[in-house]
Image (cartoon, rainbow, N blue to C red):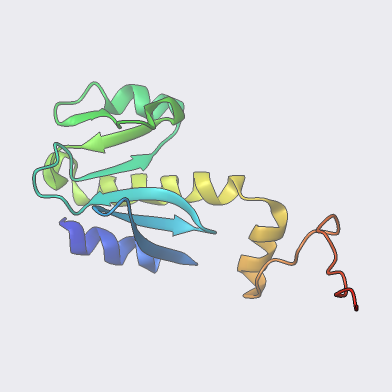
Amino acid sequence: MDIESVRKFCLSLPHGTEGVQWENDLLMRIGNKMFCVLSLEPSSDHCMSFKCTPEKFAELVEQEGIMPAPYVARYHWVALSRFDVLPERELKSLLTTAYELVRDKLPKKVRDGLTSGAPAKKSATARPLRPKKRG
């Protein structure tokens, strides 16, 4: 796989979105929460990172070319030095799992908004608009 095929795969997941952040990273998101980050910087020591289960994290970081992801390893994110470190089928499976882990942790209202296609409603505790004072 390469950056474009990973991008297309992530966008093919239901409600998957993308956005550039931190100037050099392409974030793949569900409900505005990232599940995969693709590096746009050629000099980076890794090409992508993604979330995984604690068990898979422990297994993957033992493989050559896979390391704990900078800044987010404590949340069980791994970073790949090259796209070919993992076979395409396994990488797609891991990306799907990353997507599902993040999706399943979204607040219920956000998840409901995704399935209905409508934006999530504001909570009842949101501050009501107050009319402007005249005078």
